[in-house]
Picture 1: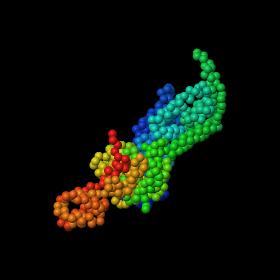
Picture 2 (picture 1 turned 120 degrees about the vertical axis):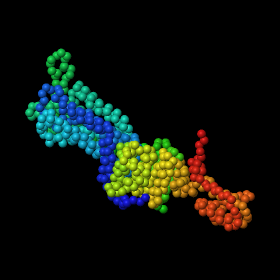
Picture 3 (picture 1 turned 45 degrees about the horizontal axis):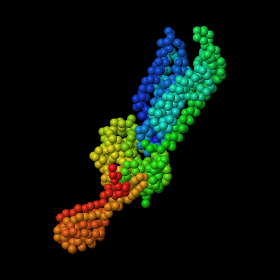
Picture 4 (picture 1 turned 120 degrees about the horizontal axis):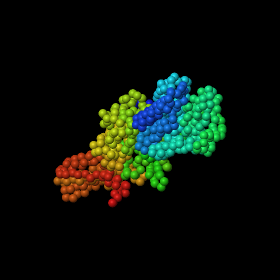
Amino acid sequence: MKHDVEQTELAGNSVSWFRRFMAVVRYEMLWNIRKKKFIGVIVFAFLISSLGLVLPLILNDSIPQNTHFAITYGADSISLFLFALVIAMNSVSSEFESGTIVPLLTKPVSRTTVYLGKLFAAFIILLISFIVIFTYTSIGSIFVYGPQNDLGLLPVVLFGNIVSAFIWVSILIAMGTFTKNTILTVIIAIGLFVSLFMALPIVSVFSGPSTALNYLPGTGATGTLITTDNTTLSISTGTDNLGVNMVYALMHSGQNVTFSKIDIWSIQTGDQTLPTTELLYIESIEFIALRGLAIALAYITVFLLIGWFAFKRTQINE
Amino acid sequence: MDYAIETDNLTKTYGSLTAVNNLNLKVQKSSIHGFLGPNGAGKTTTLKMLMGLLKPSKGSAKVLGQEVRVDDANSRIKIGYMPELPKFPKHLKGIELLDIYGRMYDMTNQQRAEQIPKLINLVGLKGREKEYVGKYSKGMQQRIGIAQALLNDPELIILDEPSIGLDPVGMIEVRELVKEISKDGRTVFLSSHLLFEVEQICDHITIINKGSAVASDTVQAVSSMFTGPTLIYLEVTNLTAKVISAVEKLPFVTKVYREENKLTVQVTSQNTADVQIRVSKEITNMGGVIVGMEQKTSTLEEAFIQLIGGIKKK
């Protein structure tokens, strides 16, 4: 059997890295798109978005005015986590579990190319998913809340949400590469998410919006932003709210966010008096957005480097 | 001599377990070289080290003249590899799998469009190529495994137990396929624990046991290592001294024994078909009449059992 493939074209360094990289991206994207659970998460995200759109209508007698709903809605923490979970939980680990890593790594693609290809595919899938959901939310918000202002900031909130979700993607990929076990990866990731999503806000009730919360993935500390038109906005500093915080930083440049501790022990049952509050610190909204972005990128970089190092060094015994 | 594969004291240990022990392997270019050994002998571990999937604990290996290093993508351009019981992503269709792997070899659209249908035909998957790999039977997975190993028109094809899990017909087809792909001068390095498979396909063989090579030569040479020379048993009427003397004078004959009208001829040549013709011609020319002729040849099975230390009694 002799065919027409030009051996010389295949030889040595003439093989294009980019084409090999794109082959890995294609391989990974087909995998993600064909996952049943991915379709499930898309449906879930649509339901959450729909709920976000119609809930104010149900809860209020009249339609509340909100000309910035589309650009300040953002994806919620659970959706961000679920998207990341479905895309990344078995991206590396199942290659080892199923043994498909062997034919993959015996092709002329380096482990770094495979790793980068998988990450890029995850990014593309997240991007497409969020574009679809944000388009849906934006169109829906026009119907529900009337004409929307500053729609040009949508790419900012989109970027912020992808970065937020990518923290979880990088954590999941790093864990999957280390454990080579999808179930273990999912258990650890859910445990981490639940502790950050639920436990930390509970702790913050007692400790106040501690600055430590700003440096952990998740919702972060909660403060109050008073805008130039005297509107009071609740700001969560965590990486999950990066997109919205970046939008607020652009819209309310120069405004400060105040963080106060509510003394819950001052609340007495049956007493009508308000609980006492203690001002802890003040930060500008730009600083909060930039710090959130820096922390998110630091987490992504560290976890992806850990995953890459583990993937490069792993022995293929499967 | 140019070798397709050359290892120098290749060793792989896992804690106190030595999977491959100072293996010195030489695979000639354009040969079909069998890598034979019982289960757990270290065959797959050796192949994984040759493919850069495992890092040797000691020693080195060269494949197609290039030093093997873990994660050296370019060194795999001219190699086709089929793992033992290959597992491919279930979410891909057969044709998609070959297409994506072809892209990983940087084959152009035209090259893939020409090569993939040919390979699908060659491995007998025509009509099934648009089905998901996850729906393929074990035999079909083996076939697509062979197809993906041939995608890049490799100089060296490494097959790890290519007929494991196949039915008898499938095994024969795989053997024919291996013979076919080796026709145009490619080197095939084939690991197997099936003696008859190696004996039928390969011209060279290395036997590995407990991680070490215990024999490496042509199949015939390894086969005759323990059981001695080939013997031809003849029953001849009119068996005269003239007949015996003529047979003794043949250059490849080392000994001749006579017992009444029965003659045992010990020969050194491995070309047994030619030997039989020349012996019978000589006898007939001298007036003898051959009533029966039988040949006892050394088998690879006998050599293999001796080399791996005999059969364990339960």
